[in-house]
Length: 567
Image 1 (tube, rainbow, N blue to C red):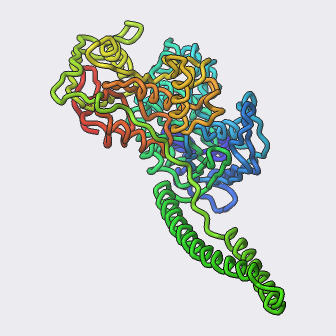
Image 2 (cartoon, rainbow, N blue to C red):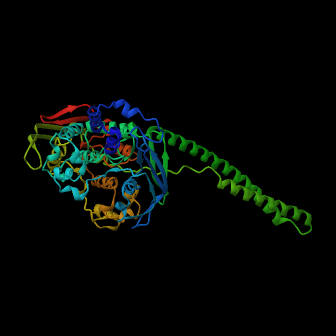
Image 3 (cartoon, rainbow, N blue to C red):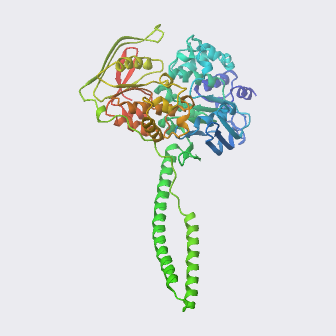
């Protein structure tokens, strides 16, 4: 009885902090943890006596109100306990929109129309948005947590355990700092902490790996893997996806974004990619073979048709029998044509796949000589933005030639603050051309402008045509080019800033989390672009593939300065 009562409160043994709470309960009531967890014999219920969790989406169609583009069409999906489903697809394909609709259809009502059903059994959803909601940005940390009723049911000891899981101070919850001034990683951690306190059944996570440090990334992987109900998430982090997902939901926009398509594959991500690639390769070979055979067949048919047609034209009235035979022969030839048309309709089609984005940054003029000092930066003390606390001492950083370096460290260590100061120094230099991409895109983007207006420096007609061509290469539709920047997805905003860099002729890139918000499909392209960039790159990242494939050196920011580190 006590176990069932406890389960009604906790609902599920989710993450390590909650499982610790559950152990405490078992000790309190002298209940065997093993018996309480594994004593289930009814296949219709989980080991807590609660009905098995199912999330079903039926016949969902979502249409953009402004340009009437169909984002999702007749989408059907069923997820069950234990499913860790990742939504992948290019930027702007509606991944976040789908996740928002599942959580609360009203969230997309201002810009989309939706028809469809979400079928469940009263499950409680825990939703992590891609960005901290505007209403929460001016709240203090304490106000943010006390808005969640479940916060008051946690003991100080339990709160301390949860904070340690996230590498946060035990008194983090009581801080007076506003949520909007936290580092990107601290914002994500705070949101995840509050979300887990509410003990939901189903986790809906939109880019949960954004900006969090590597230690927390590893914790996030464990959380997803150990969650015994449903996790539905979007992520740019290919390593996270590879290590956790057992269901792949692939959203595509094909035929120049005029037709949407989705795939639900019950398999790990790497297997899905391999099988999809293999299937497309086989289909492409068969389609090519069919087309070669069609070409030979059509050529043979053309010769037969011309021969019969010529004979009909030269036959004389003195040979009516021959004319009748030719008439029958032409009828047979035309019947053959109709048969060929039916065969062509059933012919193997070339696989339709979203084409990859294409652009490059830098040219021969962007190359930095190997021995040239790009940056010689020293700082006695790194303070928080409010100047109330020292984050690090004795910082020294030197970058030469086309080096590509990455700064890592725990959330709140001051990485973004440090990069701001480095950027301020480099942007004022006249001997180099530096470009800066902040973690918060709104620092540089004018949200009321369109992408074309943002990139246009001259107002010249040819210049605007060239910009549209470049945006098209990054998979913007003509309609999306006329949307305001505020309407763009996070990945589309990132593409816009990278394109601005590409057009500037820069030789030094300063990048704060450059791969955040890029899909697993765009990620490899972005990494290759940055790897091939002939200039210097100074960056912050927690993307493990980015560090492995792009960076020459990695520095860890600590209280005692920068220390060269491995990944």
